[in-house]
Amino acid sequence: MYAGVNDRGAIIAALYIAIAFLCAQTAYAGEHGITVSDAWVRMAPPVLKTHGGFLTLTNDGEESKELIGATSKNYGEVQIHLSKIIDGVSTMQRMESVEVAAGKTVEFKHGGLHLMLMSAKIPLEEGSTVPIMLNFRSGETVHVEAMVMTMAPGGGQMEEMDHSGHDGHHTH
Ligand SMILES: [Cu+2]
Image (tube, rainbow, N blue to C red; front, side, top):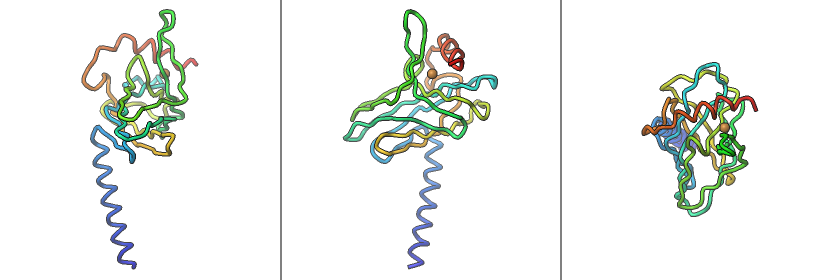
């Protein structure tokens, strides 16, 4: 019986190693069909304590999934935000949750949905990663390591709006 427990421990250890390896890749899969890809945090100078996090959620499951929040040990608080242009002014609205319907993909990207990483405990370092835990209504959690980058994966021209958006943000 003890041998069985030990074997199981070894298997679990091997799984953790496998998970650690997978975390170095770009996609993170939850238990029930949610995949997180292209997770990244926009590089910001140390003086800025609020950072924007972006990612893509894909639901390959049979049921709708609802992201209800996120946490990171590097931040005091993580909120889900939606950027909107109202009367020509870029504003952000806090979202309680974001639904990802079965078979659908939801992109958190500049000018739209994003994770607002607030009260940074450590400065960002380009090329490093930020650990983020995504919490779903189902109780499922997905851990991602978001790459710290100056630009969206795959490029994209989004620089000019960024500063108005995120620099102004920590006043609220
Ligand atoms: Cu925001």
